Length: 279
Image: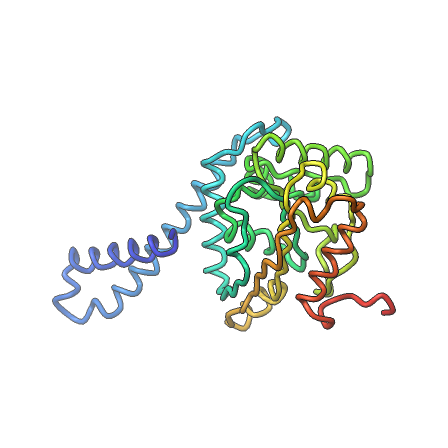
């Protein structure tokens, strides 16, 4: 939506400049119109970035965020959609009609690039996703503060006690109907683009909160920046494989749930995109 508004407004500004300068009375408009359009688009982009910076400038990430910020959530969703467009990510989706219409859930997905959360935020825009994120992300310019405002939870992957505290916080967020939780159970971004073994502790969130697990896979986000250098678009695939209901998880340990979800993702991705144990 923001992209279309920006394009339309830029075109109107450029046309207005041509009218005011009398460019349409000669051939001057042939260069003034496109130059005015690009200049207007650049100014609007800078203004949008300024607004984004201002809305995060005074956020204290050490102060607990009790509720989802509607304003920051709005900015996140529309920024995510804008990023997909700017980076020329051609999206192909399957199974999104299975997204739970009511109630909270745990969303799990493979993780091959930093753009994966952007994709999920754009396509689960009405579900108030709050991600579990490595604590280092809190220091990222703008990103750390805006993640804090939409209740993303920092996790210390090297400290089991602190990691457990994060898991408990996520359970409370779901139980108190504040947000749904998004997590990448591999724990790290896959450098080779393959599906790696899971850290099964995150599945306790769904079991303890008694909510469904939405099992997703994403492909090709790791090729976006490489293709951008070649001025190529990237076809990105987002699949919602299945939503596992709470009754399907009863009697299973977190490890068993993790193995089930891993096998579902592995089957969807295919053997070429799954780390083999003997390799």
